Image (cartoon, rainbow, N blue to C red):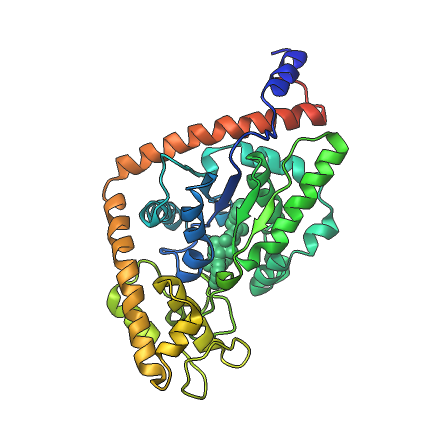
Length: 351
Ligand code: ATP
Ligand code: LTN
């Protein structure tokens, strides 16, 4: 296709349209056999709710999942389980575009271009890289782990996302995505929407039940501190009963002095829909025991249908594949459009 023809097409189909619904995009890595309460309350639940008002893109970043050493069979299994869990919590493939990152080659293609406008020093300041690379010795960290945030920027900018709902740990990566969008726009002409982070303060950092000042994380050392969406009721009850709490016996929200009980209160409030002061009032004078076991019951009640629905999706792999094929087609239509504009603007010849 002639270059002028392509430019005309781009003008007809503005990349950054003012008329469309606000677009949100987010992803969650397939790095465990189950997602956990932090992923659910900090991120996934917001994606589900935003489907009513936004044009949602929701994906599994499997390219990101190979930045650390991984087992190929586990990655394939976890990618399926990840998609099944997203469907089970309420991501609706009719309303949202649900896809797997590696099915859309434009992510890697845009990441290369963005990598060429990212400073080495800028990438070196990413705290997640510092944390993750220090675990195995910085020398042995992969270049992929280093450029991880650039690929993340490509994920976001390809879809012209207005907002990116994530937990607090992703704030710095979003800042980089914004910087790269602005830098590209300034250098090569207006091309990308500059995305806003959407971080819901109350649930932005759910902490580990065993170390209540650390983020609940798939890669945490002790499984006892992580409540998984796919845990059996018995395991959930056991983990809440053993949750580390604080010296006195009052159920009071005070993150600085009582991080354990405050984290449990946040979880309680999210699942019950009750405000923290109402919950505090309900447990006045009753101590931790009742509170913990009633919280465990609430969580079991909420997670049981999610676990059952996940299994139903896993039992029908053909349906899962069809959903993903459809999602990839929808995603590529948008991603291809942005990438064509980028290639044009940086001066690549039309193939
Ligand atoms: P890993 O340990 O493999 O880095 P993770 O458990 O931190 O994984 P991610 O896949 O990195 O999870 O994150 C998926 C989404 O869940 C992101 O939006 C992230 O901000 C959010 N998230 C992860 N952990 C928490 C948490 N403890 N509290 C709130 N949000 C969280
Ligand atoms: N780094 C993210 C996962 C991720 C992501 C994205 C989140 C990859 N690409 C794009 C939002 C938008 C994480 O949650 N650890």
